[in-house]
Structure formats: C-alpha cells, structure tokens
Image: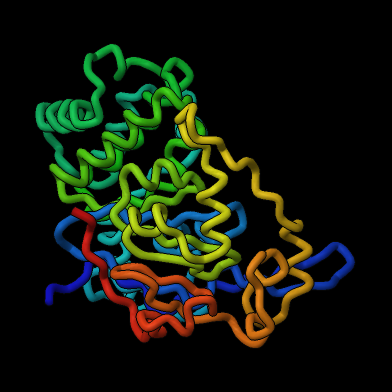
Length: 343
C-alpha cells in the first residue's frame, strides 16, 4: 500500500477563551479527528458544516497556522510536529491555500503581474525572465485567464471570480500536491461559482493536485468532491462517499442539512430553513454524550451517556449515531481508512 499524501491522526484542538471579568472557559474546536488523503489518484475531500463546526480550525491546522493540542498531522510520512525549519519550508510549498476573500488577500497597490512575480521570487522557481513569463502564462491559461491586460490590473479592477482565479493560478505555480480551499466560492456571484469549481476539477484531473475543500455549501460539495466529512461542534457527524452521504444521509443533523438545500426543480418543494435551538444554548447545556442531543428529533436516553462512535451504515459511509448501533453493518470504526473516489 502506497504512503498517504496526508494523514490526520486523532487530532484535537482546544482553545481557552478569556472574558473581560477574568473568567475563562475551554472550547473544543475539533475533537479526535482523523483523515487520510491518498497520494494517487488526486481527490477532493470536503469538510462541511455550519459556522463554528470546526472546519476552519481544521484548515488552519493543516496549513500550520495553529498546532494540534493532541494528535498528529503527517505529510508524506513526516510528522509536522517533529519537522525541521527546512522541512516546514518545503511543506509550505507542497501545501498551498486559497482563501474565502480573494480581495482581502491582495495588496491593493500590487498589480497582478507583481503578485505572481512574488511567488516566483519567494519560492525561487526561476531566475530567467523568459521562464517567468512562461510560468505565469501557463498558470493563467490553466485557470482560464488570458492576455496581458489581466497582468496590468490592480485587484479592485478585477471581478471576484477573476481574483479567485488569480489565487488559484498563484497556488498552481509552485506545483503543490495539496490545496486547502477555504470557502473559495462563498463570496463569488452564483453565476461564477461553477467556473471556479471547474478550475479545481481541472487541477485535480490534469495536475494530480488534491483539494481539502472547506465549505458550508453541500450543493457544491456534491458537484466536485469524492469524500465528505460533515462536522458538528468539532465532531464528525457523518462521513464517506459524497454521493452516498448526501443522497442518503443517516445522521439526524445531516438529514436536516440536506433537507435545507434548495432544489432547482419547480416540481420539488423546498423544505425550508432548519429551525433549531440556538447554538450557544447547546454548548452550555451539554457536558457529555452526543453534542446534537438538545437539537435532535430522534434523541434517546442512551445519547446522554457518551458521544456515539462512527457506525458503518453503508459501503464507504459512516454515521456517528446510536440509531445504527444495532444495524448488522453498524460496527464501530476502529481506524481511519482512506476511501476510494466514486466512479
């Protein structure tokens, strides 16, 4: 079996929040999270959830912006906690990021040409001006941008979709193996989102670049991802093959999420907005057991005892819910296993 590209082993991240009155409380942003991404073929792994679910914390952990409180993040066999400065520098080249706000990333005084030149210089991609032009032209072509006119423009002169494509081109230039895309289409007009998703799929298929796709939008996850992990309050509620999870959700929370997605069909009625108790109420009322208990329409007494493990509900599909504890397929998962992409 080939070595995984990225392994996340039982990672937990805890934050301590301090109040103005001197008090403090501990918040578990991510708990006992595991994931494997294979080296080949490239894949798109979606991390989905509402605000506060822990998905951005996971992105920050993978990018090295914060360290795990416990657990390991391993890239091509290297434990990042034990990596040297040189190894971390190489890791930052192999793992690139595309952020939610393309405008906020750019220096407003830099033209696109300078933004891309900085990548070439910072990563020492080449010292040849001719080769630099070729690298930039190739990157722009890959993301569907053409012409010297784009290179002469400032960020405010570009559309949101164009700015995000420049971010994709910027990441592509260093030929990474993994791109962490944190809500890359959420601030882009709906009519342009498909073009960004197409770029991601092209990079996956043609350049063998995997994506960790962070989103709250299940509809875009359904379009492009191979596997999906749905987080709730830092816990994996459900995971597996994306088509299986979204077409046949098993966890009550994921069922509610899927039901809230508008369907572009005049003959299908949208079930409307999810009505749930406030998030903060749940946080302060629960100390053990399933975190979704106060909001769950299917809750049982046993849900108060302990957080349910992941149960196998279908092939390549697990849900953390006691509803499936007695199912013949429902065997608690004992280790993280890399799943194959849907065909």
